[in-house]
Length: 196
Image 1 (tube, rainbow, N blue to C red):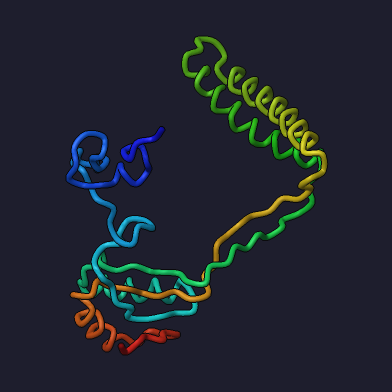
Image 2 (tube, helix red, strand yellow):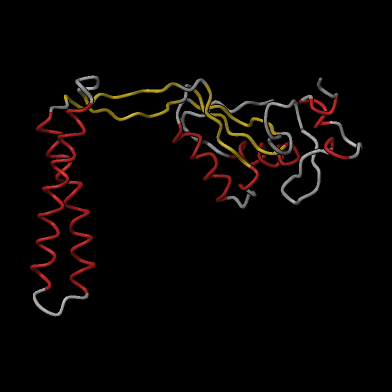
């Protein structure tokens, strides 16, 4: 037998006693869900003052506003039509994985060698070199073993990046007129600033 207070919606009823109180917010006070229930509100309403095909163009606009003493803490660059691009850098073999692991291990070994070298009374250079060599050897072993354990499932290296199809510069609605006046004086190449 279940009671009404054990249902998930019962915990969100404001103004009732016991277990039906709202959960505590950041300040310890009960806080009701805000907005449409799909996440936190984004703040004050904003207005788009321009749309640009690439990020440097949008960045130039914000830089221009900053140079003209506009409160740029009330601006945002919003990328839309996001695309994940994974650029394949090359084929990954066990040998290449060992070389990459040796490089990473050498840096770690150098760091450890420097730490021990600081407190060494004798030949501190030898301690650093031993740390470097041991780190490179262990890094190579771990790199080769880690690649061999993938079983050929991912035999390439890559770098991922997010790219947007368009970048919009937005400002808080109460500052939109001031931003538009400044933008009217700007002659920035490639800008397709909105008049609305």
